[in-house]
Length: 608
Image (cartoon, rainbow, N blue to C red; front, side, top):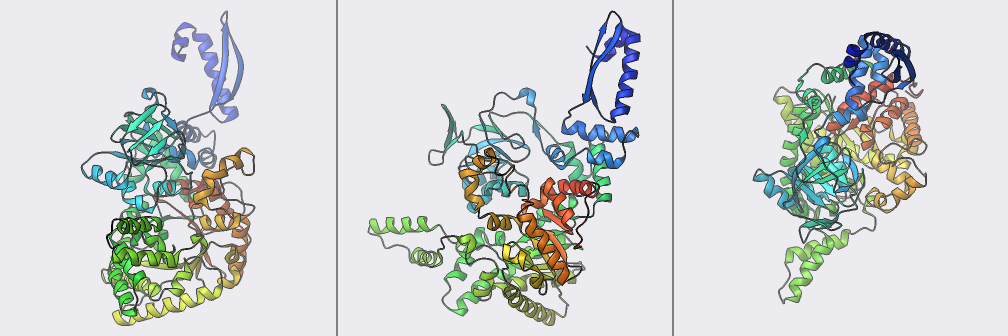
């Protein structure tokens, strides 16, 4: 029965109940669940407890209690969380109209989306180009699936976890994603997936809930996010949105940590800025070498003379420069940390097995194989590595691939010149990846400074970009004092630092044994999701202390995926970092948690 109805039936009991409710709320300073009974006109209070609440209620109630001065604004901020904010930022399904789920997986990127199931990137792009909403379904994704992921409303995979390729890329783009849905059997050749006796053919409409990890057959009704409209466009309204806005404002006023974004396109940079990003903490340049540009990278790899290599690099230069111009324009006046090429070059070549099969098929039909394919296969075999993540990549690549560093640095410098001439305020920073020894950084920094000086002289415009490094290997963390002698800033790459500290390959181990490790209590949460404080965190603390001892005032941030994880943000605050950097759609979450961390009573590290 509604309380108002009780007021009509028994006004005296209703008045006494309202008085008791006000007293309990004032005592607990919170929303309360109350049990009572009325026996022969006598009100009896049975029990009370602090009530559970939805994400919407958490923000609204905190704001109302603060308005009533039952709690302070600081306490109100402490009673909401980044996880709750994330649930409010994306569309959701009307749960009253959703039937039983077809399958369940890992909720890898929040939100809800509806679309026709497609099973390869090309089909996703084709259908999306025709105006159709699609869901890309794969056993697992690779970098080649990127165009399809961009075109799709959601991504669904049969394998992988929260740090798989699909999950990481989807979160970066703000796409809905469910990974590791082991109940589904994906048949890309048959262009279908099955769940038990249920067959879902290509073109069948499915609904994907990235917040709950559920997949439904058919089109579930969507409810739009008013919170996202506020964060993106500043559309403020009473109730929930006003409560969120006030919490965000208080967090921004309280936080010490800066918040930057990981992004590598002008569009994402502009979006991140709307979300409150104070710069870019990681601009990955390898994504700029995909698509049509891959042929130029192939030409650089296959070059047999300096002239051929310089020609390929020369063709890449203006393309890279325009990429940087757009990003620097979107982030005008704010720092943009650009990481030099990190992955092994063979990742830009066709798959080894695919090439070998293509050549063998041609030979079996009595047709001479393509000379280009043969040349590519020879290069792939020459560059093959048993463990590419620990091979020729990062700074090592820059030291042995002639002209690569110079081309990228020149593209950055010329972009800075172009923006300055246009009246902008570009603030590019150059970051060298995968440093193990200070000597590596010293050699690359010398080359960087030579190129910057040359562009400054040629253009008559001074180009001065700070040169720093990623700390993403245990040896780098343990020798951070020496590395700081050459580095003007540090940024922790906690994805690789976690891999190399634990000896885990995150692309392999999640599906292989993480569930068993969680069940056995070896760890409570994936170390790729929330920072491992005892191991990886200890290395971070050592590197912060030694780096700042060698270079007082050293700017230090984190650009690994942990930068957007609420619990990890609290650790980085306590460790004395200057900023966290995360995917654009995690920026509001990081801002809120940075504010909460500043109010939590944790002390800043003495190394600061």
